[in-house]
Amino acid sequence: MSTQTFTLPDVGEGLTEAELVTWKVAPGDTVAINDVICEIETAKSLVELPSPHAGTVGELLVAEGVTVEVGVPIITFVSEKSDATAQPSAPAAPAADEGGAVLVGYGTGGGAASRRKRPAQRPVRSSVGVIAKPPIRKLARDLDVDITEVTPSGADGEVTRDDVVKHAEQASVFRNIETPEWGDVREETIPVPEEPQQSDDRIESIPVKGVRKATSSAMVRSAYSAPHVTVWKEIDATRTMELVKRLKASPDFSDIRVSPLLIVARAVIWAAQRTPMVNAAWVDTDGGAEIVLRHYVNLGIAAATPRGLIVPNIKDAHELGLKDLARALNRLTVTAREGKTTPAEQQGGTITITNIGVFGMDAGTPIINPGEAGIVAMGTIAQKPWVVDGEVRPRWVTTVAGSFDHRVIDGDGMSRFIADVASILEEPALLVD
Image 1 (cartoon, one colour):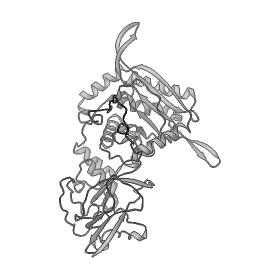
Image 2 (spheres, rainbow, N blue to C red):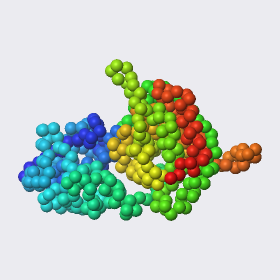
Image 3 (cartoon, rainbow, N blue to C red):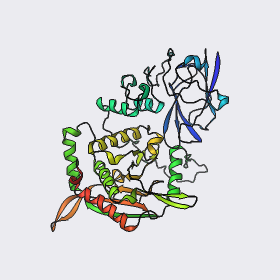
Image 4 (cartoon, rainbow, N blue to C red):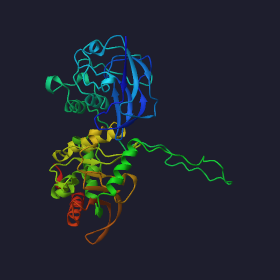
């Protein structure tokens, strides 16, 4: 019998600390390699940690809600035999005194250990023998895909991300997702008592950590390093609303949620290709600075979640047709709402859209996402009086705004870009496949 200690690992994003949000196991539970043991919240997302050992859970060394540094022991395991015996088909995890356990990427080749069922725990499907890395297994769980039913296409029979997504699409598991649900009470106001109180019962301190801590640092860094300039234009988006209505009624989009954001995203991609500097980045170097011009679009979508603001992005969005772009927006919304957005999905963005219209706002002056040179804010679309051919008519009107890094792009480029976005929202049929 041996005891192994599992320390908090760096899950691949250079983190230094994380909050242990929820334990998925309890002392006495039996676990197999790759079974999820807990959820941690890093500076960017909620991450599930798989077990690197097979055996019995000994002791939970960290309480839920506590923030710990990478390398700190969080759990112990007791096993009858070594990990090398329990998992002959995969490299053995290093001992704790050799730098800490590593996350295991493949299913065990030996007999799977039994697990005691716990009411609050998600049923675990057996994936023994399936070759898939932890992020791919996590993606399968997020999309409710049985990974044992996925046809692998990778080297040596490995299940890839595309395999899981393709299987999910064929099974039509993507569902329409609305704006994230919030509590019935948006704010709590404590009435001021008639007589002054001697206590601090009316004051609540909220620790700044996790996503909120990372967002605040990024916004301060962006606001005080990049000189922001914002321009905006009010437009008649009636034809965009008509197109959205037609797409919703189309059989080709019957299983896809369609909103005006889809047309805005397509317009931003098109406009960025016409004015490439909005898709560039200012990079400080040892010898000064340089502007990096990117000939691809990783489109970021700012998402307000109960855990804070995150900006996942759609990789190579410029290569997607309207239907595939709609599917990508749906997947982004699902994972963001469920708190399952990975750090990789938030890295590498080139330009961002923030849809403040969902909150009833007409316009805004958004802060640029660090590492980018432009961000587009889409205001609410509402019926207003509008002059058409010399007559005042009710039209669907909105405001599209953009903030830009003035070190990278000048006023003519900013104005041309926003004018291009506006022209597509006024006549979106120009970009339909």
